[in-house]
Length: 287
Length: 143
Image 1 (tube, chains in turn green, yellow):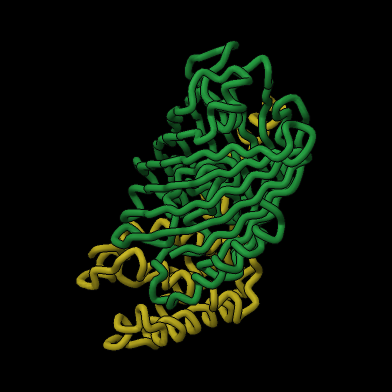
Image 2 (cartoon, one colour):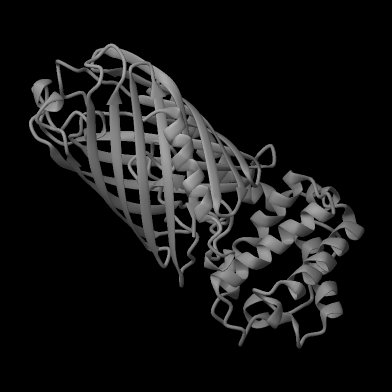
């Protein structure tokens, strides 16, 4: 993937918006979140307890998104779609395409499919302003690495498929920070994945499920513009390819209820022995 | 890094949890909304926008809109710590028989945000008023 290709995908996605606005559901701006790197609704890196799309409790919703991450030695593109049923259940599918463009095995790629299911248990992140509890959802992400045999197997990953399980708690505090709206999310994920699963699952250092914390905080400067940060701890299963936590600082802009644009600076720790940082761009169209 | 992040999230949570009570006890909100002329203008524009909004205008066709504007202004004034007492029906009774959906409620919130925009209501005052109105969703839906 290069920048031009990402741009073409963005334009294709933007064209989708000409589907009549009547197709848009009745949710409030930004309350479906954006699409995270594995296709669930959330921030950039972390799934949130929100159900994606614009459907309310008696409507269906949907969202499609394209995300590009440009790092020192790699490029990652995720193309994702999700279907939301009555603000209760979210089904998502994502294809990740990880290109090795720099110092490590240039010219190779690793692809992965992620099938996600999320179930909102209780709570209304925005509506429950007089309650202390957040909106809570549980979810899973079933992942299938399509290029396991070459690089992931070589660095010692045990298998090419795995399932992550998570619980997320999200709450919006209206007017809480100097009168601005504040969104907080905490996610606990049980996973064996190496670098999301792009380097397979399990390894020589550990082949057991590990619970890892992921968090997001965002401040809405206006209803349509948010600044935030994310943190995602990960397991470290492979001695041949150590990994660390992912972090980003993002700005999300929703010029229209159906359109979200996210730009971020990401620091993704070591990937296959080399520290990585770079840009992150994402575009989402919601219905 | 993780410890610092967790500490930060914890502090934000504590600050956030306190916010609804703080906003409710905040007597400056009424002033920030522009006092009586401010809340009267917001109520007027909200009813005008919603009466013209294809998604929800049907709810406004057969009612006395001037009376609704008056009651809403009184409610905004009372909620925001102004010198008024809301004398209208409680929220559940006032919406009985309408069977409002969540999308209807959200359409009203969007119209209120448009009213904030038209009246140049400070972002912070608008958010604090919405924080006080948001829990009413549970009381007014599906009646």
